[in-house]
Amino acid sequence: MLLISCPNCGSRDETEFHYGGQAHVPYPENPNDLNDREWAEFLFYRDNTKGAFAERWLHSTGCRQWFNMLRDTVTYDIQAVYPMGAPRPATSTTAPEGATK
Amino acid sequence: MVNTAALTGINGLREIRRSPASHLAAALETGSVPGTVVLKEGPFQTMAGVRVDPASEAGSRIASVTGGLPARCGQVAGAEQVSVLWLGPSEFLVVAPEEDHDTLGGDLLGSLTAALGDGPGQVVDLSANRTMFELTGPRARAVLEKGCALDLHPRSFTPGTALATEVGNIPVVLLKTGEESFRLFPRASFADFLGRWLLDAMREFASPEVP
Image 1 (cartoon, each protein chain N blue to C red):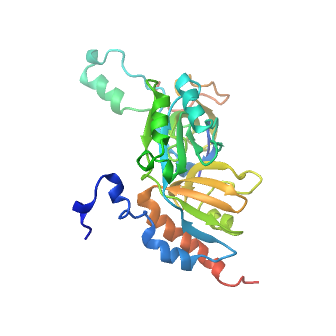
Image 2: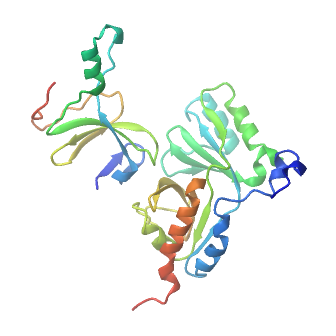
Image 3: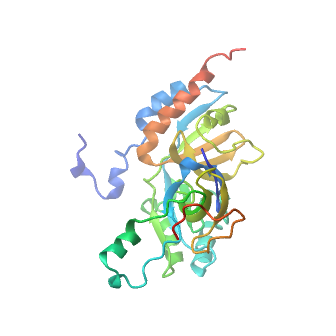
């Protein structure tokens, strides 16, 4: 069980949260210009990072607010919790292996 | 079968309505251990869901009606018998006695709606959304701790605090009203399960303590 520190409510059990997938996936500026492959990549293709991974979480049984979290997918160590819309904070750890972008 | 033709207006239905855990009333009474832990379903309440930015003008108008808005997680605001529970940074649950409902001569919802005015936000009548369990007694905390991961020790969970969390895997708003008394607000459809879950958690306190 992860103990996740919600920015509004403080430390809560992982079961109170829902996972929202990879963070910082921008909506295409001009969706009509995309071909099918690019559109499919925007919709369905996500990084499968080994290491620090920025992801979205929802505190669904608490304050019902979304936030971003930087989590190590190997050790489950939560490195940072930051609001939606904020840039990904720099981490002291080395660049994640297997990152495609 | 109730003769619905004889009922006039919404208040005609008031006599035939049942609270979500009314069928458990007898079980709650036999399962309670007076002096140790007592569980009962509370009376109907008037509840209003309010979504408004507390820093906005509409927010301060709403705050003047309810007697303040809670500023952060856990806080409970309100004046007299009205309590305002914090559900989110811009989401609040106003709980008031039943007679404050507009159909019973009160004006809670009307005054909240008027206070919101044209401002961004909403006021919704949620009186039937949740029911209320009252859990009291010296072992009430021990019962809750079987299914709630929060720190319920009095040093961190003080009377007059309300937290949205899970008890027995059911999402509830847990309000501490006194040193040994709690109120749980589950959604109506979860009332049966949560009532039975609490009864089961209380069973051990009916038998003499094993040394």
